[in-house]
Image (cartoon, rainbow, N blue to C red; front, side, top):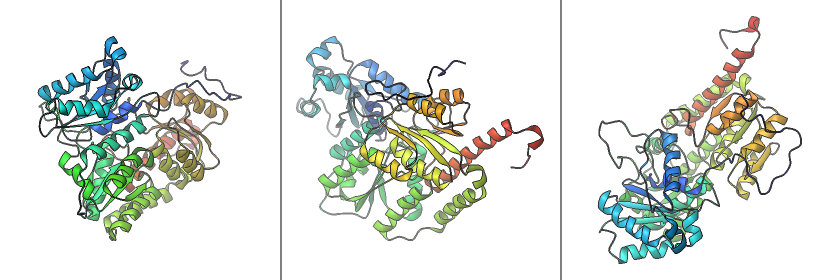
Length: 456
């Protein structure tokens, strides 16, 4: 029962060189997740075996599915003289044994500190004939001593655009869609919207069908899901681009614009009412389409639910932590519900994140580049009715006896997050339902016996 009871309340001292319980994981995990959104790709960790094991195990624990990845397996000699020899050997072995279409290499702290030149090593691999015809190598620079798993995702997305997209003098009618860090089911939901609205598109990365692949009784090294290389290549001929979640997608969007002349919108992840509206409005601006009646109906159902249940949501104090691209629309959505978002912490740094969250909710305690220790101190000094964040928040929730909604990455102790979307209007309905159930369960637990209601 001790858990985090050592966290002090009262006066909070500013810390500059110490992080306690970080609200983030490291860059290569994001790069590995983005890589697995390419059909037939094998992520490769250019560093030690331990790094690769950590990245794989974190994704495996989140999705309850084995994650395939390879490593350069640095030794003491590699750490001193560089990892080029290990990587060249690995590339040859991987193509001959595992036969991927693409090797997606991400660097680690060690290989970045040594100064391994990925451009040069990649060129040497091709020059030395270690890459079979038709096979590809992409890379992203993702040292863990800077950034977070979200920026690692962004760096690999930039690598996908740089190395897989092909230039084209003629433009098509399709849309190049870059989803931010969301679950496979969220990517599937976004594709459903595009199909209902009649928008031709290519989406990458796309983990739909990768981390939620069905059990078939046969081991499949490369699941049938993921964006195909030949489809990604067509993004250079796209009419426009749509990027969802600025922190995770801006680098890819800028690369599409700069290198291939494909311009487009970067909007928030479509979490909640207003953010989903903005995604739809962007599509209307690009394609001049009429919103399908079924989409309007879904929006109306979400508005109806918010109206019906307002009495349980209004004024409830909330603390949230996690990835910035999710926190921004989630904060906005909670305010739409009438909730009071008191504390916000994200481990990812950036002025844009600070400005957007301040703009949406200027009265909250906000820390960009903060940690969960600070959030816990805030909760002790100003208690809340609900905590929202990844699994690591369960200790704070238990310590403060606060209802806890698991949301974001990673979720290690619950199942279903890869199957039930939280984006779009229907995703908004699910979020409201989850929040309402937590708050109503708390009422049922705490209410005096004579006030117990069967119908709430």
